Image (cartoon, rainbow, N blue to C red; front, side):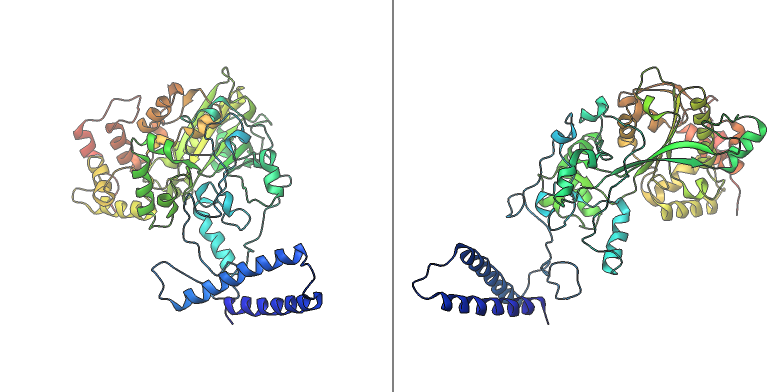
Amino acid sequence: MTLSNTNNDNLSEVIEKLKSIDESLGPEAEIPNELKEVAEVLIRKIKRSDDDESSNKRPRMTGDLVLENNESPFPARVLLTTYPKMMGVDPIPINWGAKSAAERGPVIVSRHTKTMKYRNAIGAHGGSYCIYRALAVASGNLSEMHRPDFTNTQAPYKFGPNPQWSDPKKIVSLDPWGHLIVENFNKLLEQDVDVRPTIAVTKAHLKMAEIDEALKNGSIVPDDKVVSADGNVSVVKAAVEPVWFLKGVAERFNTSESVLRRALFEDTGGMYPELITRPDMELFLPPIGGLTVYIFGNPEIINKPDTKLTVRVHDECNGSDVFGSDICTCRPYLIYGIEECIKQAQSGGVGIIAYFRKEGRALGEVTKYLVYNARKRQEGGDTALTYFKRTECIAGVKDMRFQAMMPDVLHWLGITKIDRFISMSNMKYEAIVGSGISIINRVDLPDNLIPEDSMVEINAKIADGYFSSKSKPEESDLENTIGRSW
């Protein structure tokens, strides 16, 4: 039996009962208001049911879809997109850069029945993991109606508000109030409006083989506060999902908002038609990975002007960071950054690792491995001279990390200056300084930590503009820097 048939059968039963009530009242009796209201609701339902039935008999336009599966957790009619003046559309206003969460407004993206009309954002919560949530719902492992219980989920430390939160130019890629939704929007939660955090903060301990080795050789000394004698490192960490203020993102990339919206629509396979149909929706939660901040030391003094800060901004490299590949310097630089952050925290300052999910310079791991193949097989071997050319041949561009939005998380933390920046990247340096954060010292990776095969990468990058305390390699140096062959 289809959904429409089920609805019609139920309506028929109710109508027959109403007729019998009407007959019992008699022709002179006044019809109760409650009965009038019920009748009006039924008339609307009958009309809608008739419309559905007649529309089922008509040839359907492309994109019109009706599900007739009784087991589906969703309404039969699929709403493919919405429009600004559409009936039932009444988004809660967003005032990006407002001084308070109440004035700014909640980020609402859910299509849940009680939330749909209030939506003010495009996309979905969870970044790339929103697809797994859909699988959980489709397979029956998760109820579409499930709502999180946020009891005891609050951050263990106070984060903000910082002055940068109310500057719409400083933060455009995350919701600075994203970890404070229970405190600020509890009334909406009580009304079953689906408001969710986009930032979560917790405490943790790190245990790494390199830190154990550093304790043994004395380069790190345990203090039982930051580092214990058995090598456990105390940290506070924050997970951040992207929330894009589209106008601000467009400005960062020196393009128009309309071009940005069209590019996002086209290059996600048309997944988000509201990028086109809802220009009034200013926010987009993209299906990409976010970032994690690891904080060494007291997080509540990060925003103090006299606090010494050591910072490393690190872009994910699964092959090196996790599995120890030596074709690049990613893990050695990450570990070095962690050690320097520990030392900064032990001296009364704070160390920060900002870890972004931008695998393979945001080109992805498949593209990265294709580039590896091309580098190793090319005539003349894997040389520093052709390091970027092989990437450009395959990807069309040598780097898609585009660090323009990277400083946002530093502004969220309230940072105005960095004392020691553990990075050689000119792109990261220019983005941070260009956003108004001063960098006092830049720290390059010590030579003894650079694997032999990754000399190809490091020399190519220094020649391309990376910071180094050494002299810039000549073209002949690049030509003679050759990585291992297969």
